[in-house]
Amino acid sequence: MTQPAKNTICLWYERDAEEAARFYAETFPDSAVGAVHRAPGDYPAGKAGDVLVVEFTVLGLPCVGLNGGPGVEHSHAFSFQVATADQAETDRYWNAIVGHGGQEVECGWCRDRWGISWQITPIALTQAIAGADRAAAKRAFDAMMVMKKIDVAAIEAAVAGH
View 1: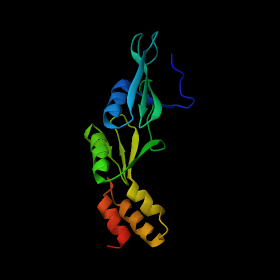
View 2: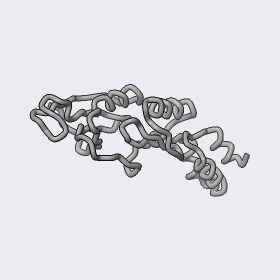
View 3: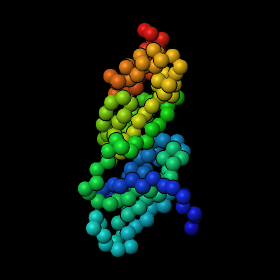
View 4: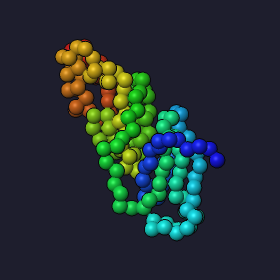
């Protein structure tokens, strides 16, 4: 038995933790599904033998998915923030999440089909907003505020003052 990570993100799913983990592993690099643990007995949301806990990693972060049953809603108070190198990578992750039953939100945020929030954030946006030129940062910020999926070219144009 391997030593568990000292700190692990635990995500509550109604019943699809294994499906979610497999989707993340197929979508993101440095992601994988590890052990799948079945319930040793009946529990409020399931019965003995049902998948109870799934160990997985998302972009190198250790996670567990708990099939805890209905009644627990996710919020934007927790999200995965994924730094993307360019528009192609931004599009790939955004389209995978939204196209697999997820939904667009705003300002680079989307939600997957299980309710988990994701920030698909181009590095160009982060650098523009944090840049020393505060007027350019404000233009980039204002441009972002009207976007759903981030448009890198539009952010770069805003920084340039176009």
